[in-house]
Image 1 (cartoon, rainbow, N blue to C red):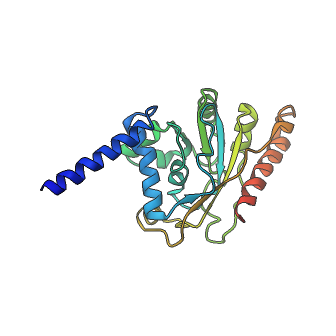
Image 2 (cartoon, rainbow, N blue to C red):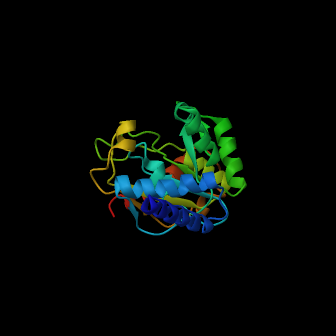
Image 3 (cartoon, one colour):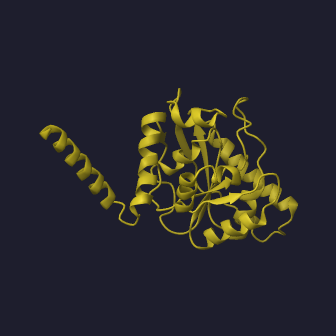
Amino acid sequence: MIWSFTCLSLLLAAIWRAKQRFAHMTWWEFVIIRGSNIYARVLHRWSTNRPDPFPMTGPAIVVCTHTCSADPTFLLAVCRRKQLGFIVAYEFYNTHPIVTNVLDTMGCVHVQRGGNDPTALRKALRRLEAGAIMCLFPEGNLSGVIKNRMVHAKAGAALLALRSRAPVIPVAIHGGPRTHQLLFSWLVPSPRATRAVFGPPIDLSAYYDKPRNRRTLEEVRDEIQRHVAALRIK
């Protein structure tokens, strides 16, 4: 009994001490961010090529390959910011009240599939204008996982980058579950160690003063995709 109480006390003390290093976060934000780190390390043997690649203040856009439903935790695991928002499909955003609460806490934005969603775009831009980090999976789905290749990216990240002029950080996820099965990716230990590889911010300044037409968007989209693809072979 005494031994159990001592262990519990030491655990609580360790949690409290860790929270003091993240004093800028609420307890719920701390649980989400640090819980993602523990989850990713324990279940998916997660690692990264660099610590905390995100700016400590100000906006940023993160573009990442999409390998499984647990991918957001592989980005949250390295984060020291209080929020790391994602663009999330509407049907997943409202899967369960707890899921919705977590996504709201992180400053996520839900988007309708199958076409343009100007409401989601405006919300994401407002988040960036307020200094938030927004994460996107430009491929939109996991259809490239089975064939081990990237899917042609959509232009949403390019449009956000041009309108906000926020730095764009490319990421590629190596290993991990690599599956379309939602519960499998979240609950089953990964057969391959997961590694998040972050690249330096992409310089898109050459496109800022160009006409914001379809051709420019496609060029920016392809430039972003090229940087992300280069990280897949590292």
